[in-house]
Length: 395
Image 1: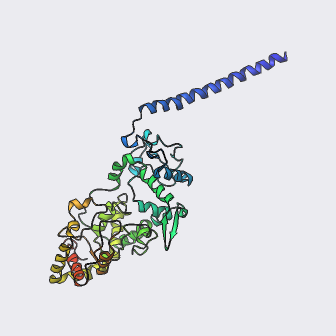
Image 2: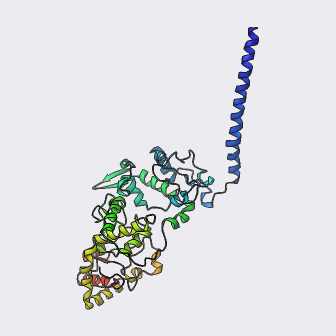
C-alpha cells in the first residue's frame, strides 16, 4: 500500500521534471540555436568586416582588440550601451539602427544594460582622437557637467604634461572603430555640410546671459572659463581650442561655426541646440572678442602697408589655402580642419605673430618665422583689410 502511494507521488514529479527539461530544450533550440544558425547562414558583413577586426594578419590581437579588452576591463559597458534600437528618436540621436552582423565578432558582447552615458555603437568619426584622450583623462575637460569618472591611470606624466599610455591609445582606436561600416552616414549627420545665415536677429542682454549659461555648460572645458583657450583639455588638443579673446567674430560667423562644428578638430557641431540657444551662445562668444575689431581694422587704414602686405601674402603662398581675397578656395575646404576665411573675422597682431612663429599643430598651417619686422606688420594690415565691413557693420 505504501509503495503504491510512493509511486503515485513519484510519477507526476518525474513527468513534471521531464516536461520542464523538454520545454527548456525546445526553448533553447527555437529561440537560441535556431536563430543563431539561420543568422550565421544569412549574415553578409561588408568586405571590410569579412575578417576579425580584433586580430591582425598573424592572428595576434591588434590595437582595436586590445582597446576592446580595456573597454571591458574598465567597466565602460556598465554605463555605455552599444546597440541603437529601432525606437523613437534613437536614429536621430545616435545614427543608423544596429544590425546583427556588426557584433558577430564580439564575444562577449558589449551591448550593455543601461545608458547612463551615450550609446557608443556609432562613435567612429564622430569625435577626434584628441577629444577622446582629453575626455578619458578628465571627462569634465570636454563635457563640463559629465559624471563620468577620470581614467588618469591610462596616462603618465611627461614633465609638466600628461601623455596617453598605449592602453589609452588602444582604447581610442577601439572607440574610433565602433560603427565604422556606417561612418559616412554618421559623418553626414554629425557634421552639417552647409548652413546659410542670412543675418543675426535682434539680440538683448537676456540673450547674453543665456549664452553665458550655455558657454559654461558646453564650452569651458576646452575654451576655458574666460574664453582664452586655457581649459582643462588644453594639454591634449591639437589644434588647440581657440582663444576667443584674440579675435573679433561676428555673431553670424559664430552661429555658423557652432552649427557646423570644425571637422578634424575637437570642436563639435552644436546643431542639436535650438536656434534661439545658438543665437544666445553666438552673442556671448561674439562679446568675448568685441573689443578686437576697432584696433585690428585700424591697422588696415594704411593703404601702402596693405599693398606691401598683399605682396608678402602672395610671396609666401598664403593664398593657396586662404584664397587671394580671403575666401578659402573650394578645393581647400576638404582639409580637416579647413583653413579660415579672413572675410569673416579679424585677429590681434599678437595672435597672428604667434601663429607665424609656431604654426597651428593639428592643421595644415605651418610656421613662417621668416616673416618678420615690417613684413609681419604689413601682413597683419593686409589680413585685416580683407574683413567684410559692409556685411558686418559695426554695432
